[in-house]
Image (cartoon, rainbow, N blue to C red; front, side, top):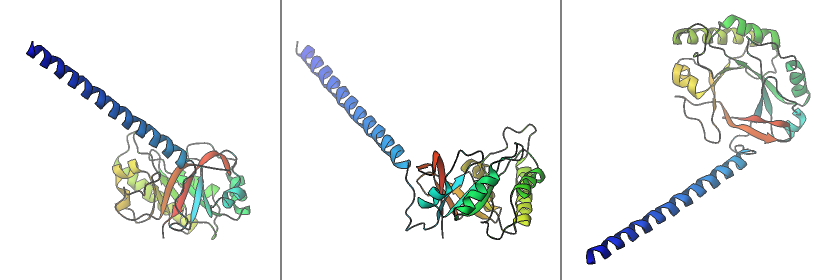
Length: 243
């Protein structure tokens, strides 16, 4: 009879422990959900401090919906980088209009050329030279290197990717008379390690936290990939300059 009572007490203790653990796990889950909701809400308008980063701006993607550049300047942008359509796609007829509107709003302007590792440098640089004027007032051009060569019609070696990227950088620099900035994605850097082999300023990307996936300091940081503002119905990528 005593053994029966001891067994019953043990089951009650185990049951109480299970209930306690369940409550702790439920509480932790609620805390995690609450933090995720707060983080999502805060990130909608978050950007780094103007004191730490006095120069701030935005990326305007190719085929962007309407952007009010005057409003964009009013909310704190000093510059914009306008993204070109990749070379294998049709020309973006609205690029010139966005360029003019940004200029009229008093914003400094740079241009991003997305790099396609599957095709040679020549047609890509031809897109840049055709669309981008030679102008001393332009910011240094950026080459966006975010996509690795995994879906190419024909296999492309790492050495070929690096060679075509270097050729493209040289061609863009010849047209613009300015050194390019490499806008490097984390996956691209992990595969090709170009930050250590190409001596160009770096532009890294990571929401909220300072990026550290390159072996040397960066010049530009995309700090919020989805910042909402009155300047555009669609979120914009917010960028700061490190000095």
